[in-house]
Picture 1 (cartoon, rainbow, N blue to C red):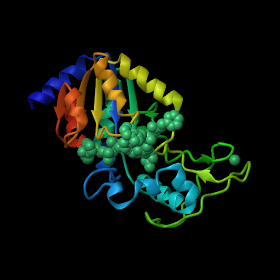
Picture 2: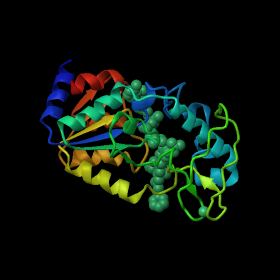
Picture 3: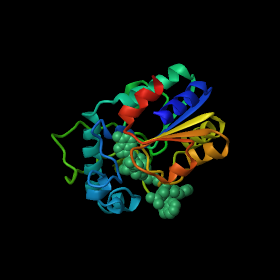
Picture 4: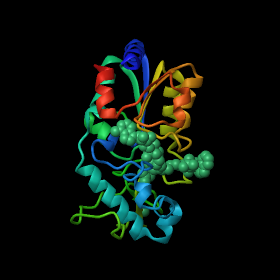
Length: 247
Ligand code: BV8
Ligand code: ZN
């Protein structure tokens, strides 16, 4: 309770806020995280054979099918009270930048229109050859995580269409990373929510804010490497802790 009051005060006094989110903020919407025991995607699926350029090159149908399944999971999910609370911060502090590692669109659907996507999106496929954006295919029945599905062909050049996400070993979108770094270096408060803080360079964002003098507030039910740099740690689920913080 004391921690919550301290964090709420820091947030209320902030002129510039950066919000940095990971899979945990969407967990209560029914979107699985990556590294949580039992429910995390990497508990059931192998990252190396799904989330790398080599994986797509070797087995495009497996990789495309898996991302279509994830797009379906996100499509049936709704933003939760955590996403709503993040959108409400913008009404209190107009200089707010929402930065997410998530490839879902739940921040946008909660009202955070300008969300910066560091790891791309499930909703922006593009051609591997000419890089032109491609249309999303119509869903073909109820997908499941292991079902192969051939990727569509690019209408301009016939190349394979790939998911618009950032895979391991790929560079992050330059403009998104630059906006995120600028917001982190210039904010009074950075709120880090539902991320294990293990994937780089994204995990540098809260560290950059702390080095630049911002107060870091962390919302996560479990310990993370970011505990050390956080001024306040709120050990609860996002959909419960965030509405109390913003109220
Ligand atoms: C690059 C998109 C170079 C696709 C993802 C050794 C040391 C340092 C770095 C490296 C290294 N070896 C390799 C690297 C580099 C690598 C990396 O960081 N690896 C790590 C794992 C060691 N990084 C890269 O490859 C990056 N690119 O370095 O490029 C380069 C430069 C120039 C030119 C060419 C190349 C690219 C990384 C991008 C990977 N893409 N995903 C997809 O979605 O399929 S990563 C994946 O992890 C996720 O998508 C997500 O974006 C990211 C972070 O995960 P989290 O969101 O934090 O999720 P996680 O499950 O881990 O944690 C959930 C948390 O929520 C937990 O803490 C849990 O307690 C909490 N939680 C649970 N429930 C709740 C909750 N919190 C609140 N409320 C709840 N209810
Ligand atoms: Zn093309």
